[in-house]
Amino acid sequence: MTAQLEAPEITVDKAGGAIGAVIGNVRLGGGLAPETVAAIRQALLDHKVIFFRDQHELDDAGQLAFAKLLGTPTLAHPTSRSVDGAANVLPIDSDYSKANSWHTDVTFVDRIPAISLLRAVTLPAYGGNTTWANTVTAYAKLPAPLQALVDRLWAVHSNVYDYAGHADEGRVGGVDVKFEEYQKEFESKLFETEHPVVRVHPETGERALVLGHFVRRFVGLSSTETTALFQLLQNRITNLDNTVRWQWQPGDLAIWDNRATQHYGVADYDDQPRRLHRITLAGDVPVSVDGVRSTPRTGDAAHFSSLDN
Image (tube, rainbow, N blue to C red; front, side, top):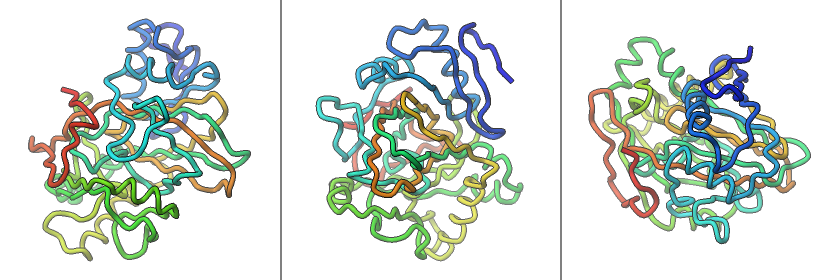
């Protein structure tokens, strides 16, 4: 089924029942008409992640120019290096790291980015897909007793955790990253932030779960209780019925609502090169269902991002 939005040239085809849509008949860049930008943003809010094919003319400058139409770019990352000469562009590079675990981008700071734009640069001959999950539908489908529990639950997120460990090795979080240089850079400045496990989306008013591999512990719960509850909730988020998997092609760009999703880059491409460039847009400080804002415990992220008010 193809839907026509405000901009008549834009088409939107669903990629999955719970999440994802492919946007057609648009050439991305900094010169798009306001009504086209509004239509793209509405599709993003509706489908949580949207995909564009055949954007072969898009480079770092064009990606940044288009991103600025959607919001205010952040620096590439609070601690990791950017692409040379492009302070807003983060390289996702197989020679440097493989983020093969479920996460929402940069939840260890108070001002979680609102939107991420990821562009294919170098792709392997096979594998290297990315999967997204809808954290809004995951919350909505929780039984009422679980909703009542998580509505008042808070979690501590941090950028410092055991990269060498396995994600399921008796603790919350953990990413199998074998590059010591990346670990040292990622942890070069400590960030810890308390976030509500359920946030209210600032544009849609929907409730979404805020979890992923940066969670260290739930406030007030023991490590054993944290591990059990975290796994239960993560399993709800990453249930296959709640996900969409994207097979990258040259010229692809993906945009996701970082306030309503988690994602996972699948490291199934052996030693082949894989490189994508990411730009993130400034977000707000999450607010719980009872109106309490997230609180930084350690680290000031003002250098990384302004606040989207």
